Image 1: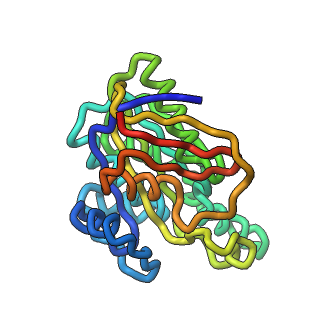
Image 2 (image 1 turned 60 degrees about the vertical axis):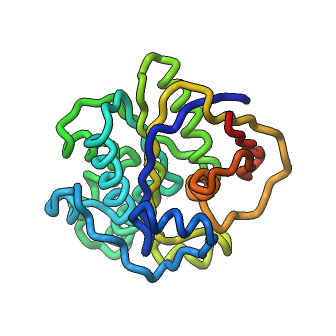
Image 3 (image 1 turned 180 degrees about the vertical axis):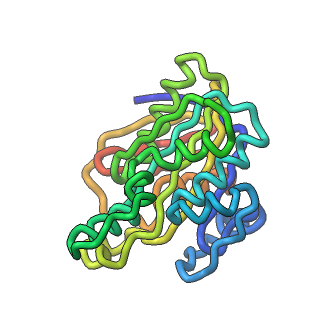
Length: 240
C-alpha cells in the first residue's frame, strides 16, 4: 500500500511531556518517558467533563479541542488500541463482585467515547469515527484518514491515544508495552509532503513506544526517511 499526505499541525501529551519544547527535547535526546511523571494541567477541557472521562480520553479530548480551536477541521478520527479499558475493567469488577455498575461507566464505555465527547464539548457536529487495529492502530488510522481526504474532507484531525492500563492486566501484557496514558493529535491535508509505503515482514516483538509516538519522534527530528514496525508490515516513511 502507498499513500501521501501533508501534516499541518500536531500536539501531544504523555507523563511529563506537554509543551512543544519538551517534546522536541525528548525527540532529540531519545529519553524514555517516565510513567511516574505527572500529566500537565488541562487547559481546554471543562473541569466537569474532565472528571467524567478516563485518563486516555481526557488527554485525547484535550488535544482535540486545542486543534479545533486552531484549525477548521472537516472530519475527526480517534484511534486507540485499548479504548476504554479502564472503564470496562471497573464494569467487569463491579459485576464480578455483585455491585451496581456506575451509569457513567456504562454510558462512556464504548470505543468512540472520546470522539463523541469532543464533538459535544466543542458543540460542532463534525464527521467523526473511531478505530482500533492492535499494534498497527496508528498506521491503519492513517489509511482511514486517506479515505476521508479522498471523500472530500479537506482537513482531517486524527488523535491516537490510550489510557492507563489497569494493574490487573500487567502480568499478561508484553514486557515492553506502555501502560501509561498518552495522546498524539495530528492535522492532515491532501498533499505529497510525506509518503508512506507498506512492506511485508515477519512479526516483530512489542515496541517500547506505540507507532504514533515513534512517528512523532522521527517527525520532530526532521528525519527524511524512517520505518515503523507493525505486526505483519513495515511502514516505510519518506519526506517528499
